[in-house]
Image (cartoon, rainbow, N blue to C red):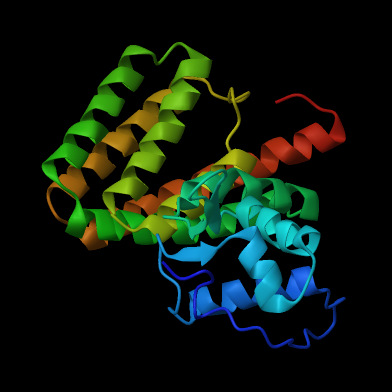
Length: 251
């Protein structure tokens, strides 16, 4: 087993527009090697001791680089005999909430979030009608059945609506769209919809049932159109709810 992966070179590089500490340079080089496909999940990167020797830095600097890589989800670190850092297998969902926090801290508007959600969900509905499986169809039907049973329970119905939208995107079998929607739902989807009336709940359920049917019938154009109209409606309601909260009024 190599002491340090050969993709990791020892020369120092200049990183523009930031303080190019050696720890930063080690992290940047690992990231570059990943994007260049020179490092793969499961590859042994090296130990703290061997990285320090390769770059001619202290073990404290190497440790700081490895901790940063671990925090970013790039490596898994095993301590003790036979330990060291290996490139992680990856789990994009772990970072969906972190992305949501950054979006919230950035101060993106409800309108921006809903525009992005519309783009993601309309494409996902189209893809779901092409790529969904029998298990996906059963999941969508199950969620709609449960939503109909819990239609008078605002908190449960709101949660089930969120799960239905996620299930549609999961049925697209596009992991990038799934992670993006999870992030946006953290920011945009209320725990309990404050303006959900029985009439609105029934209309939403009808749309969800129609969407599930279009996906199961393999109608990508129809699923896309219906989801587009549906998310536009949700977006208008979210924007109005946010405006009312800001103005201190009640719906």
